Every structure is written in structure tokens, then in C-alpha cells.
Image 1 (tube, rainbow, N blue to C red):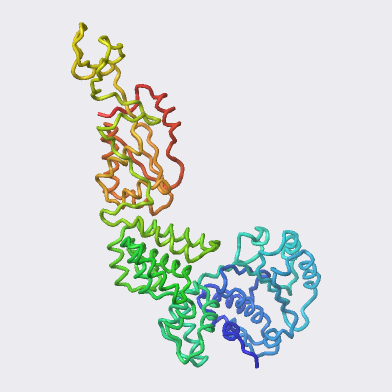
Image 2 (cartoon, rainbow, N blue to C red):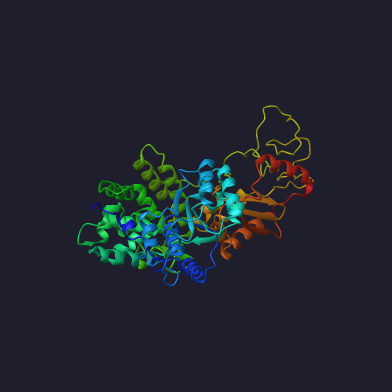
Length: 542
């Protein structure tokens, strides 16, 4: 006898056997027992959550000769005939390969006939979102005016592709992702029924890898089966995942800015057969767990793949901006990994980038934008930047002239030799109208750098995550994500920013922080135009 895959062999036969979808199975059993059946059902949800399984159970239950509390008995001739395919009144159609209007027209022509061996003619249409527009229009007519003996059960993973006209004529049931605990318990039942052992840690690891899809978890269990007992090490060996300790070691090397150790750990994992893409995904999961720990979200939302004490220790020693930036870099590397010519090199470059900018005390990130440098007294006065008025010369050095009479200048310049004219003042006389300098975000960064931590300054100076615009005494800061907004709204950090801006503006100021790109930082041309429009009303630095 040919071997049957475990996910087919252990497919639930009644609603009571379905795992994690009690909100749906309870409603369906009540409809069957009361006889209040709909002519069209739409099952939506991610893969492996039980949509097709519930559709087949429902098709048997509505035709069962001896239903038990809304469940099919699976023993009567009708149930057995539907199960083995000998009763043609229940038809399962894959819309991915039968998506033309001709297929739906043939279905309509057949559906008008009464069932031959059952009470209802049931059509199960899987992946219904793959139907063409013309096929949907052809299906709509029979959904509007169906015969009394006809029931449609539609299933899809992409609800947004189903027309609203179809949705309005169906009862919708949303299948949710199955909890890891429920998946692990079901795997233990299957392992016991198959006669081999399954360690609880191995069952939990398979449940996490399945990402809410019970069918995927059973397929992974089938892949790992063989020995008398399936251990966690065997699961990692078959799947290609690194251990939690190895990922923690890799994170420690990266967070310590030890690029050599990080690459050495990756090389060891690569040599042992681990997929570096899977390693980066595990490292991204660790970043997520640490962020949840710092937000005091509890252990219920965490992956469970790492030691809880290590999570608490690392969360206390690493900054939020580090975790956010690391998550963004790893996500970008995973996207590039799919089309990279050398996956190993791409993964190693990601680790090197992560190790470059960690917010260790005294560590200068090489990937962040350079902070504005203070002007040096020994250097000549730099050219005025766009958007700001030229600064007056503080104390021009006396320049000896070979001619006895110097060329007259608009501003008085002290000369080394006395002249018949009145002696110039020792200090340059300022112009009657005071020269003003518009405050820029770079000026605020230069002043706030002395007050905040290197990590906070790195985040503020990151032009990809933070953009700022200054209008008069108002500073509007916009961030690229909600986590960055939460960090900038911290009372201590906001106080430093407001203090620095107020000192530069010379008066009371307002600082706002929001998410989005409604107020991008103006470019140099915009700043200069605004300055010329303001005239004498520009902000004066005191």
C-alpha cells in the first residue's frame, strides 16, 4: 500500500477535530442542526488553516443521513461515497486551473439539475480569487438566483481580489492563524498515533516554524519523522536553523561592534550547513523579541525561541534605536538576498553594517551622516550657507599695504600705520541693521549633540528616518515609523531638543513630532527664498 502523507492521513473528519477555529465550527454545526443553511459560503484565511477541510466536512454534513450534533457520521453510504468520490453531487474545483468563463458556464449548466444520490448538490471552489472577470460575472448570476438544492462553498487566501458583488451574496467566515500551543498539542496527538515520540521543545519549534498553518506543521513533522523520538536537535538539523545560543552569540558580537567575531560565527554556521538567510531571519526575530521586552509587552507575543533571562539581560543593555535600525537593515538584507549572486557575501555584509553603528559608549557610527563640524577660528571665514545671512567678520587681521593710502572700504578696517584720517575703532563697527542668521536643523543638531547620548544623536541625524522643518519659532519633526516617533517623544530627549532650539532662536519655541512625510525638510533653495521674504523678521541669534 502506498504511503499517505501525514497531513492527508490526519485531516479532520468532523468539525470537532478542527483545531483553532471554534468560532467557525460552532456556527456551522448550529446551522446544520437547525436546518438554516445558506446557499453560498466564503471561507477566507491564510494557507493551512482549515478552509478546504471545513468545506469538505460541511459538504458531507449537509448530506449525511445520520448527522451527530451537526457533524457527519462518516459511516453512512452518502458520507462514504462523498469521501471516496463515487457520489458526483459534491464537486471540488480548483479555480487556479479552471478560471475561464467556459468552466463557469459548464458549472452553471450542470448545477440546475437536481442531485442524484444526495440531498444537496455542493460545489467547492478553491482559490476562487483566481477566476477571471468574465468568470466572476458568469458565477454571479447563479449566486443571485440559486436552485434550492444548490450550495456553493468558496475558499480564498486573497479576499481583496474577490468582487464586492460576490462578497455581498455569501456568508463570510474568516479563518485565523492557529496558535502555536494548539499546533504543538495536535502534533503530539499525531506523533502518538504514528507510534514515535516527540519532545515538547521539538513540537514547539515546529509550531513556530509553521507560522500559524497547521498543515505546514504536520508536513514538517512528516519530514522529521524516522527515529523513535524526534528531538529539538533533529528538527534544527532537518530545517537548517541555528540554535538559540548561536543566534545570541551572533547578536552579542554585532552589538559589541566586533565585526570579526560576527563574521567568524556566520562562517561557522555556514560551514555546518546552516542557511544564512534563515540565520538572518532568526536574528530579526531576536530583535523583535528584544523590542517587545523593552516595551513591556510580556512573553505571550514573543517567539519563545530564546532564553527568557538572556532576553531580559540584552534588552537592558541595548538601545531602542539600535534594535530599530538593526531590524530595518536585516529586513533590507533579506530582500536583497533573494536576488543576490552570492548569498553568503550579502549576509556577511549585513553583519558588517550592523556591527558598524552600534550605540556603544564612545563609538562613532560610520554609516550615520556626519554631524555639523564647528567652525575653526584659525580657518578663513567659510562661504555663507544657502538659507542664512552672511556673518560679519569678527576681528579682521591687519593687512599691510605697500601704498601709503589704502583703498577705502565700506567697513572700517584698522591699519598698521597712522593716517591723517581719524583713527579707526579697535572693534569693527557693525552695520545699523543687525545681521540675522536663520536657524537650521543642522544648527540644532550641532548644539544638541553635547547633551544627548551617541545613540540618540545617531537617530536624530539619520536623514532617512528623521526629517525636520523650521518655520520661525516652530520646529516640526517627521519620522518614518511609529517606533522612531515614540523615541523622539521621550520627555528627556524632547527637552534637550527644545532647549537647543530655544537658545538658537533666542525666544520661546514650539517643537512637534509626528509620523509621515507631511513636513519634509526644505532644501537650500527653499530656505534662501524664505529668508529673502522674511526680511528683517528673521530669527536673530543673541
